[in-house]
Every structure is written in C-alpha cells, then in structure tokens.
Length: 431
Image (cartoon, rainbow, N blue to C red; front, side):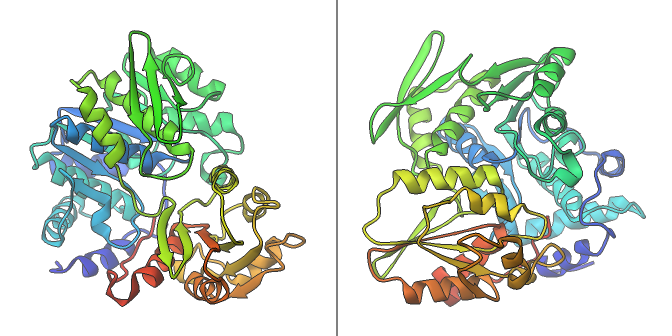
C-alpha cells in the first residue's frame, strides 16, 4: 500500500480507535494467518515497571558477545522507529519494516490492530526470517494480555513491580504483579529483579510450576569499588566492570540480565559477560552530554519508582555548581509523586508542556497546577521540553548540571536540541 515507513506509521496509527486495547484474541488470529510460529529457538521475555529496556540491552549485548545472533524488540522508540527492532545489533531498515508491515496488512483483513500490535507482528515476522539464535522481547504494557505474550518464553523476566498504568493493570502492586506474571510459562524459569516481589507473582509461579529465580535469594550482586562489582550464585561468581549505563540501578538490571541468560542455559564465557556488561548502550538512560561545561543528562524516567532511582543518582553524583531539572510529564502520570522524590535535590525547576505528545499530552499550566505547593510548581514554565531545556541551558553556567526527564517525549525533544538540526526526523511513537 505504501512505499515509505513514514506513510506506514501514519496508516497504522489510524487502524484502531483506541491506542491501547488489552487482549490477545485479535493479534493471535492475525499471527495464525501470517503463519508465525517461533521467532527463534530461544526466547526471553522481559516485563516490569522500570528497567525493561536496560535489561534487554544487557541481555542482548552479553548474548552477542557469546556468539549468538540476537533479535531484540523494545518500545517505545526515541528518534527512529527502527530502534524497536534490532537484528544482530543493527536497527531494522526502512525497506525491511515496509515489507513487514505489508505482510501484516495482507493477513489482518478486517481485524483491527493497535499500533503496538501491528508493530509486534511485524517484528516477529522479521525475526523468523533472520535465522536468529535468541529473541528478546520487551513487554509493552503489563504482560498477561500484551501482544508479546503470543510467544512462549523459555525464560521470563520481571524487573520490578511498582505503581504505573493503574488504569489498565490495577491499583496496587499485587494486581499489577499478577498481570506481569502472565508472561511466565509452566516449568520454565521466572527471573525476579525485585527484592520483595508481590505475593501475586510468587503465587502464580507456584501455581503453574514456574521456577522462580530471585535476586537476593538465588543470585546476588554487590559493588566492590567505584569500578568493579560482583555477581554470584551458588557455585559461580564473577567480578565485572561497572556498566557504562549510569545510575546505581543499572547494576541490578545487569545482574538480572546475567541471571536470565544463565537460566536459559546457554554457554557463556566469563569474557562474554564482562564485555557485554561493559559494552551495553541505550539512549535516554541518563545519557550524558557536555554543553559548554554544563553536564546534561537525559532520562526517560516517568513514574515514581524511576524518580526515586534518579534521585538516588543525584545524591551519589557530586556536582560543582547547581542542579537544574527539566520536567515534562504526560497527563496519565502521577506528577506530584514523581516530584516528591527530588525534595531538596534540585536548585531550579523548568517545566515543559507535552501537548506535542498527542492524546496523552498536557499543557504546562495544567502540569504546574498538579504540582501546586511544590518547588517545581514555582519554577519556570515553558510550552514544551525543548523550550524548557533551551532556557535552562541559557541560565546554567559551567559547572552546573541539568537533568531532563519525565517521559519518552521529553527525552526525544531534549535529544533533538542536544544533537542539533542533524538529528533524525521525528516519526509517530504512539505506544
């Protein structure tokens, strides 16, 4: 129907009246019509409130260092849709994605698919044709009813369980945990990155006979010094370099990734683990930039748990001057709880509106109203994240630092500012 990726993305955004519709019936029906079976001999599926993308990146990097051909499916993207589909370390090209979308369209008939479902089927179609050894799937929302759950995982991973997307997943950790635990399969490993996973997760694992592999019980990690850390389980331990991905939480994400690969029972040389941990990269995770002596970090963190991790990073990372925060949230996020995590850590707040994010966007005045009484509400208010970052950069002298966070939209806008006019053209992100 279309020859360009931009046209296809605009088209698939219009094919379902809702951005999100939970359930597997429609997407499974189309998968059967497409003849989709299994994207690779081995599959790891990663769910969780936070840390999914980083954990996928660590799994992918370590497995590739071990000599495996790996496909990785993640969402959302920041600058280019091809970020969602990586095949042996390369982003899917426009021509390949166009062919994959055409294959989905030819099979779906009058079955409505959401943007995410359309993209998931396209990714699985590409993976089946790429002769891969391992596919790593990042869950989009929840797990039990997510399109990625079409595929039976050999190893399921739940990074963390916290409050987010309550309208879809439930109002407490127990309800949300049950939805995420739906990716587990009977008699297969379920790797848990939470120190205290919800009882619903453990109950479900027990009920189906999944083998829970728990951090702090079955595997352990601890920092040794500023440059090294240790991962260990009974009968095995290894000292590793600190990941290039910043923030203390990345040790946990790397540890969970190692546990997932060891549960998969593939051959992993120590050197492959070491090189993979050191080499994993992911845009928008405290991604650093130096702007004339001002240290800028861009992060996609958008919920209270992620905010607490960013606050921990600020506490443990010294700065010569002042700390500025550029914050731009979406309308469905608990902005007040996010801001509360930074109490006393930020010297100047710069709020940005997110109306450019589409239906989930919010104007800066409405965002400020949600933050009434906080230091952030008293900060400068700008129409969008790019304007907020520009204003912060003009106000910050060398030695100051700026943290940009609050949504994938905020991170995308910041990257366009920081990379300049040569950065990639924006494409629809949807969900």
